[in-house]
Image 1: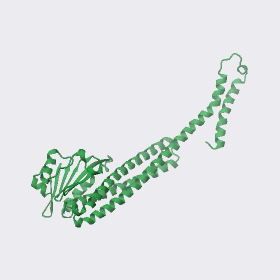
Image 2: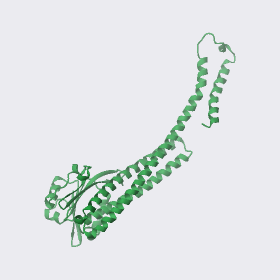
Image 3: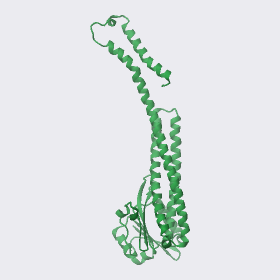
Image 4: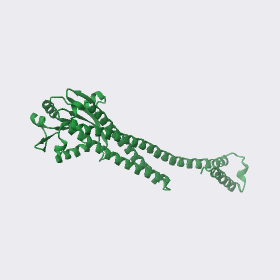
Length: 328
């Protein structure tokens, strides 16, 4: 889908679908979502440069993601999307910054794009003043969105941590403990996935902003350079916060796994004690279960009760010893 954003007499003219070359050249922002070959060619013919293919967008080399051709910058990074639906994924998005227009090529829709599009309809004169201003304000919206995701992720992590430690201290039944610990483990696993994908997005933004900063003399207008510096600081602080959350999530995952291991060891210990306690009675029963012809005890009147008493005494002996040692 091809969407053009054009400012006409201080108002936003937003149009979807194929446009003529003159209309494309007049747009300040051209957004391509899952573009067709026809849409790509129309933009390329109108603006005079080639757009990267989806395969080229997925390449991981820095030289393939960040480069300059003449006076046009090509900037690609992976961005987190689906955080609201918990269907987390990352998808590469390319920002093509030319003197006349910003072109975005994407195959997913992060929420920041929808929010920014709505903002453009309310205040087009502030956000759509120039292609570089559109790109920087869009990055600003993405950073705000990532900050919200990290805040929510931190809160989810705290709830999972308190639930796990509360479960470990409680005297609940084993099956309920297992369910609670499993839920905490899944929650922390989700948190770890979100923080990892957020860190990937912030890393991509850092590389883009570093590249743009090096090219700012030609790519960014003087009035927009303070916004670029603010974005660099914000992304750096979010990256540090994201790394902190990632380390915390790793620690909590290890802690929950440790709690689960302790619970499993308690169960194994119980089975071990039972097995050891039953070994002497089993030995006694095996001896008197042999079918030899000459076994004096078989003719004793009190032989059977005596064997029962011996088996009970031999079973209680290990249990008493374990309790004395504090193993039970």
